[in-house]
Amino acid sequence: MLKNKKIVVGLTGGIAAYKIPPLIRLLKKEGADVRAVMTEASTKFITELTIETISQNPVARKMFPANRFVGTHHIDMAQWADLFVVAPATANFIGKIASGVCDDLLTTVVCAADAPVMIAPAMNSNMYLNPVTQKNIKFLKSLGYRFIDPGVGELACETSGPGRMSEPEEILAAVKKFFEKKKLLTKKRVLVTAGPCREPIDPVRYISNRSSGKMGYAIAEAAAEAGAEVTLVSGPTNLTVNNGINFIKVETTDEMAKAVAKEFKKCHYLIMAAAPSDFKPKQQAGQKIKKGEKDSLVVEFNPTIDILKSITKLKKSSQRVVGFALETENGLKNARAKLKEKALDLVVLNSLDESGPFDSDSNKVELIDKRGVADKLPRMSKAELARLLIEKIASLK
Image (cartoon, rainbow, N blue to C red):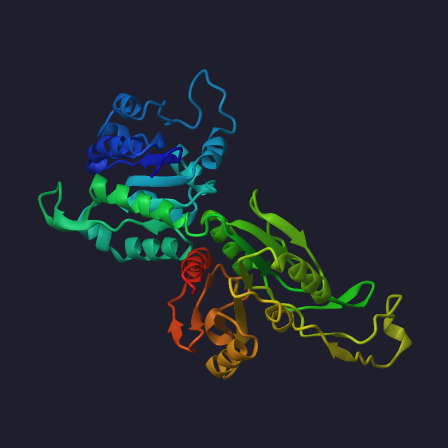
């Protein structure tokens, strides 16, 4: 199940550190390559030698160990891993990550991590239930951090309540479930669109919209994470795409339509998360329009091509198409109409009053299936929403 998976286990200073050697043994038994990062406090509960012996890899502990060149050690480890598991995770560690504090090797590596991070809290009940700790956990969840919730039981401080770290077998099950999700789209080709389009008025001006592209990029990464061969067609954004994703950069709606039409015949799933322009200037000025030449300026517009409507006419029975709808009024009614008119398999409805700012890292949406049934989701990070969407899309019949 975990053969050749690269997992970094981070240990912080809690008595539950005694559960980590059995966890590492279980991970290795499943075929994982495990490396550990320990805080100074964690070494008070369990030795480096124990962790090194079980993991069969050197333990990373100091940012600047003596007699070793490690100028980018934290970056190398952050990029090496397929998954990070921090267990036990103290309230202190959770608070530092939530605040962006990187004052030791573990917090620095986690901050620089490309891979998902799982956190298994372990602490006194009062510390776990403290409103600040709960606020930090909620905030990190909104950013896509995964939590393996603690159990309720007897604690080291001779009290009983929530805060007892999950058992090694439970953490292993969460890790295996994570990698199972990565196989949902194996051998599938997914085409994703993202970002805004720009329609030129003259050589230096254009009309566009406020789309940041973050949702589309998150979906592309989640699809790749799920084992798919991914092509991302993107309008202008400031975002970067991970290696392994085929990237096609476009600017206008016409360019996006041509790219989608070319790639669509090769894909199993099309996810239209982009925000193409609905209109474009009827004429583009050959030179920059000067401010002083006219008392007023009138720009006439023509409709742009409807990419979804045109592409679903080419749809095969084996293909699935997902559209996004951003509405400012009558959201559900308009989304259902779009679903039917454009023969979509699923519509993701964004309501401007609930979705939040365009460049936000979180989103709140409704999913409308082919029957018109709506599923209203709670606000969550775009990364977490993207993974949920991929699960939903993979199950479309």
